[in-house]
Length: 236
Image (cartoon, rainbow, N blue to C red; front, side):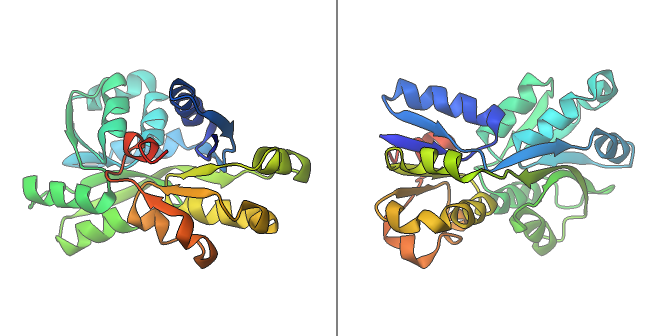
């Protein structure tokens, strides 16, 4: 089965290895590349905060680039959205990690259950664009927080030849979609070839991701039982 991997390149390489071990043929089609802002991260960390929160392993990569300047923060409580993000944080030296069930809304619930009266605020080290679910959840729970945008994901442009080869040579059997933003970008990119991809399986990490899939592809959607990559790959 030819499986489109839409993650940024660093993560996509690991996913490709998993797919090969499952007997599948990965086709790398990263939709975005990360632009890091370590200066913004360093400035944010200098501000008073009670704990840290991250909803992507990309944020960990930005923090890790600070080197020794991060050392004094490795003992702080860090809320990570799910197991993969928590694992990346642990590998970078964070020692007090609280792991959420996998979505931003659920992570907000975890924060609220453990730290309902933070003062100073929670520091959310975020990317752009991002789902509003975590911040909306914090507001609903009246958790004080500050958001620092420490990286952004910029779309990748493909020439028509490379795109056709990835999508149609031969036609892809499935596409892995990890975020609402990636789903939107994917369907904008493949719109000229939509009819040729009528049978492609659209494998979504969560309901939130599936909501961004165009109506014409709704019959092709499958949603992971749990919002992590193992849950996504179990749909193959």
